[in-house]
Image 1 (cartoon, rainbow, N blue to C red):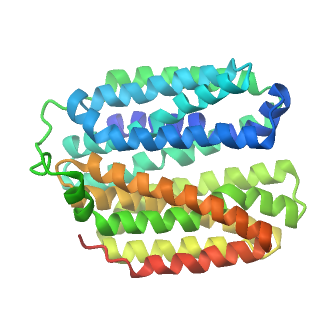
Image 2 (image 1 turned 135 degrees about the horizontal axis):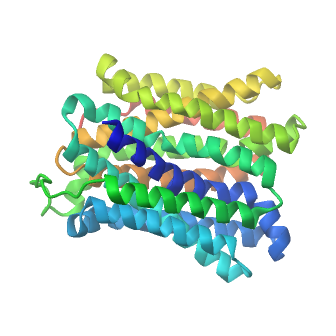
Length: 370
């Protein structure tokens, strides 16, 4: 199992943390070098979300046409090209194209690897394999944090280094991840997308809600603690690393689901997630770092749970469910970030974080049965 899971974890770490999330950490220095305005930086960052969404939307189709192995390799290749593009960017347009390409891999890797896991593992091992693979984001966050602390001004060197790591991971996956010769046919392959969406309506709803309520933490938590609590840049990056390190615990989601069931797991994890968002209002440094840890754990747990949920709704073709879930999560985060920014601008950070934690309670009432 480890022979397959470890390179898969590395691919998720590269496509999510290195190719997508690391851009925001280096953005101030990139902007200074290229002379970008805040609006320019925001636009460039949004191109990564657009490509991620487009890749998710077409992922199940191209997995069916090309197979899980080729799509996973394509995910790694786009990460390498995108990271090299960012490292060599000399203009706004160059940077925007590079970030767009870098974002594609994250939208392809999760569906491809979830399909691979379904084809490779027994039901007893499938949930654990999927949730551990999903925890790759946390491993990537832990890896990028120290790089930001040590080389924040040498951002080009950092992205060259990230691209080198991405090449190694791509080669690793190329030789280890199997093709899908034995892929089971899904009896729903020929149904239209309205039928597919109806089949996954509760999964989509839950993903959208979690995307909205978690967006404020992903987008504004570091701004919150530096603005409201006067924490230094170094302290805020440590906050980010704590969030990533705690997220590794998210790999146990599969075992939790098998012990207490999907429904109870979903509601317990969501309560911890909402509690971590509200806890950031407690100004003591200890509570700030506990908030980061609880958010990291619960976010990776709940996204891992969504993958498990998707494999149960689409038993033979989980890429469809994972694509729909993560697309809904991304749309929720996009909408949530916009309204969170407006809310904070009109009120305050504490009010905004409290409001979004309360809004997330709606998610407790979403059924987990299809």
